[in-house]
Structures are given as structure tokens and as C-alpha cells.
Length: 116
Length: 113
Image (cartoon, rainbow over all chains, first blue to last red; front, side, top):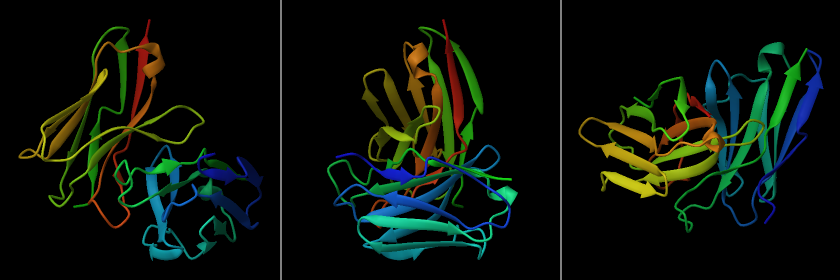
């Protein structure tokens, strides 16, 4: 398996623009997580899905952030409008609940977002 | 009550030495304690994990020590190598429900020659 795939790897945009980050989880995994990593706040869980249904979005910082999972192999995280303080590395991770290595989360390579 | 506190923030160890990173948690419902390793430009990857029914788990040069009564756990890297230089995150979760992880703030480890 290719692992968790994220695109783009780098995104530079201007304040006020819409940004869409994409994630393809590992095939067969039933949970998908979106994290944000910054020097100041470390790794923060934004939202997670189970079988394409959002379970907990309490970590989503503002209404400007939204996430969808239209099917088992694709998820998006959208920021509209973007602000400089959204600059961070965004990770997607997936897991198979009760899998061989119990609940191990597999992370993608991340998207480095810079909002000017 | 969901926090996981990690220390130190950064650590420099000589090659061959022992690296020790500590974490403490508050939520007694946590029952799964993994450590993740992250290299620059990469996503975190599971290194080793422990359940509270054992006090120690060893995998090669990496050992987790767990103290349930103190609500603390630590990662020991024996015979540290330059290739171990990375950021290490402890985490905690309640097994089931997709394993929603609460991460510590990370420790930047540098192993010098």
C-alpha cells in the first residue's frame, strides 16, 4: 500500500483566499484524522471521521475551517477565507480500529501551508 | 484533564548515551500510550506503544517505562545513534472509538557524534 497520500505537499496563498487540502487514507481504514502542527501549539487534532461520518470536530478552530469525507478514499480540509495564522503543517492520518497493531494511526507526509 | 505533559522540550545526547523523555497524564481513563517519532519533513510514525497492564515494554534499543500510580511514562533510547535524531511525541488515548490520540508537545532529540 502507498500509505496515506496528501496533496498538495506545499501551498502558498494570500490572505483571504480559499485553500483546499486533500487526503487519501490507506485502503480499508475506517477512521480518518486531520491534525495541524505548529511550533507554538504542537500537534492538534482538528476533526476525525469514522466510516466517512464526522465524529468529533471540537478541534476545528473556527467556522472558516470545514472538512468533508464524501467516500472512504477521499477527504478534504477547506479553509475559507485563509489567514496568516493558519500557516502550519496539516497532517492527515488513518487507522483501522482493532487492526493488527491496535489502533495505530498512520500519518501522511503533510501539507505545508503558508498564508501571506 | 485531557492533557499530556512532555519534557524536556529538547535534548542533546552523545552517541552511545541514553536518551530519556518523560510524559505525564491526568485522565485515568487513558489505556493506550504510544510514542511517535517524526523526522523533518515527514509525518509522525509509531515507534512503540504500551498498555497499562505492564510496567515496561522493550523493542530493540527503545523501552517504555510505565508508572500507573504516578500517571507517568517515559521513553528510553539506549545506545543513542545520530540516526535517532528526530522529534518524539508521547500520546495517550482510550482504546476503541478510533483511538483519538492526545499528544504531548514533543521533544527534539539531537544525538551528537
